[in-house]
Amino acid sequence: MKRSELIFALILVPLDYLMILIAGIIAYALRFNERVVSVLPLDIALSLEEFVARLLLFAIVILIVFALTGLYRTKVTRSLISEVGHVFISSALVFAGIAMYTFFTRHFFESRFIVIMTWAVGLVLIALGRIIVKKFQQYLVGRYGIGAHHAVLIGSDASNVSLYQEVRRNPRFGYRIIKQYKTINLSHIEALARRDRVDEVFLTSLDYPQDEVLGLVELCNQLNVRFNYVSTIFDAFHTEVNTLDTLSVVHVRNTPLEGWGRILKRGVDIIGAVVGLIILSPVFVLASLAVVIDSRGPAIVGLRRVRQRGRAFTMYKFRSMIVGADKMKSQLLEKSEREGPLFKMKNDPRITRVGRFLRRTRIDEFPQLWNVLRGEMSLVGPRPHEPGEVAQYQKHHKRVLAIKPGVTGLAQISGSSTLPFDQEVKLDTYYIENWSLWLDSKILIRTAIKFLFDPSAV
Image 1 (tube, rainbow, N blue to C red):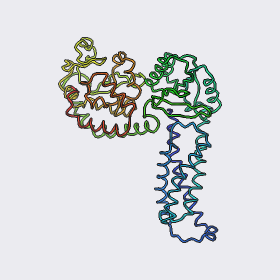
Image 2 (cartoon, rainbow, N blue to C red):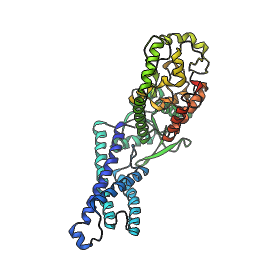
Image 3 (cartoon, one colour):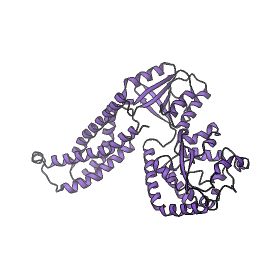
Image 4 (cartoon, one colour):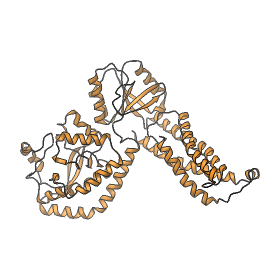
């Protein structure tokens, strides 16, 4: 998913709303036009202010129906004719309901003429607005490559050639083919993805060993690259089907955190981080004073961690260990009490007195709200780990690198460091594949409840 796709999807919402309002006002003006009144005598007393107030609510209902019927999807490959038809059907559903209600009760708009004309004019204006937006978006993709999805094609049969020709011939699909492979070359694809040069992979041939194909799917999941295939294989995966003219392309969905899900989650992260930083500012001051009084060193430290697609970033925490603790870690590795790549020692001699309290209460994690605001982390997600620990991950562990790491997560409310590492990965994988705002809300609530009473934090 490209940022430009999100922007254009967001533009459509206020644009459709504006077109509906304009259509309603035009219909209202026509109803009170002298020529129309001479043919259809006026027997209503509906002021413009009252009409507009109702229209504002009515327009919101239409937008909701549009959203439910997929008119605000961020990745759409249907033609403009199909787009207009989709608008026609969706708007007809709403206007038919309003028309029936108005016909039988004469309430809400009190005029059948206004309802019908609002629908007719609105359909034209909405379709016109969407055509302009889509044409401009296609122009940017075709002319400048802005918003184009960089795709890799793998295959050597007729489907590969057909797909390549369709993509080149139709800029509305939004793809640019950057590489074509006859064999599955995981190392090359991974290198392209880590340089942000590939967004999607298309498998167009079935003439590959099953383990190679599954390895390709697993790599795409790890790197959060969309995996698509032509034909009807992998029926066990969660899929959705898109049509590129004569070809059916099936997308294996990595996570619900795509499109509007990603927008909603980022919006919640920004609001939560801002509110949290403001409300917790007194705690930041007191914790900083306690840390610097208790031991030598800075109040807040930046630690190297790994986020999605294996990228390193600096994660901020209140310092809970003595200065130089990282250099002592090699001497303590054999005393780790946790299986797997993660180091955990209950009575770690590097932890300061204040640091132990900060860890027990999770206050040491509060500075990560700044990481959330910067877009490096999310409020909820898999916990980020050190580069050296990530280097020891087995292949199936890397699934947790598909999305942004979180300040808290499903594993943290389910036992945290007392869990076997494989169990932590399973919980984080479940979260990635089943994300919802409701799941995030439950995790945040349970995190708050465990805030002062989680022994696994020490």
